Length: 436
Image 1 (cartoon, rainbow, N blue to C red):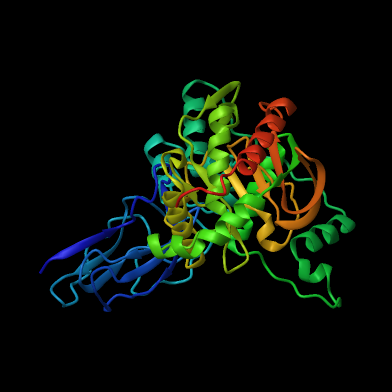
Image 2 (tube, rainbow, N blue to C red):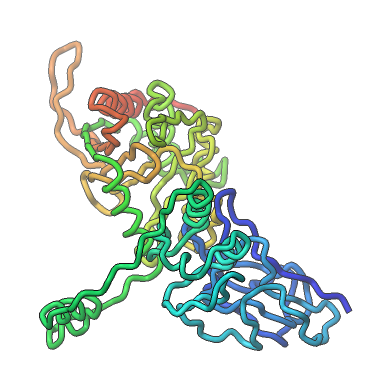
């Protein structure tokens, strides 16, 4: 009998752990090669994990909602077709015949401590580091967490360990309790229990889903990190509209891809970044990190109404067909929940098309750690004054507003406005006779 270990897959260079959302199989079930075994989530995207073998599930080592380190064995599959006797556990997480609801308490504790009595949750990776570094549970519970919902991350505990070794105590002392007045109790209850706060009101209360919570946290953090400035301009995109109307059918016949405005806009942004590379940077402390790769993120709407930003890597190396193919692929994968975690990482600049939803313009929030994001509005016909050799004339043109939000710590008004204007000029210079 052969037993195959299924491990938590590596989903991106910077992703070290993932949350198990749902098991599609239970011990005793048969599974085929590449059949979806479970769904997982990172702070970037949700993914399906296929089986790496064909056989029978003998063990499931982690429950739904467990946070599991990359490379950890999460299940075992017998390839003989018969259920094997349970083997020794390969992890500190409890093993059960079927996944059971898990509480917010940690699944294990560091070897140097007793079991936690708090309601904090610690990932196996953090607990393993705590155990190997001799961090007690009491110390662990006092470490401020920078992760989602205040969770202690790998970076948090490593910083704590490094500070302790250097003699710096970063663990805050426990705060002594003070008497709470009745009015404070009411306020605290209402803040933590919105149902009581709106008792009797004609409302519907909907809890945020996991992705919406992450988006909210990311947006608040961005506004707190970067002083946002937004500049606006408009572009005459008549040549682009007429060219696309003329070639979209032959383009699809030639390449098998439908061409939208998005790859054309991305092409213009890439050309403008080449002239203004200080837009394609990030800030770490007092150091400006100039990115040599041009990885353009494009905000895409999900069926749930949430937004995600897949990234076109090395966009400057792709022609219009290459950009079109990648835009379509990423947009389709986003709509069908097929994006991989790597698809949303490494962006250096982001574009969002608010015109898709009918908006003329927008003031987008910077996608950290980038320093700028561009919004393109809806294309509208407007009467415009054109300068001709025979004099000024009024003509109906296809016009579009563009806006650029940028981090005023590193991008001043001159650079921001110059870059934005260059993108508009790129769009207006578009050759209506361009070959496909």
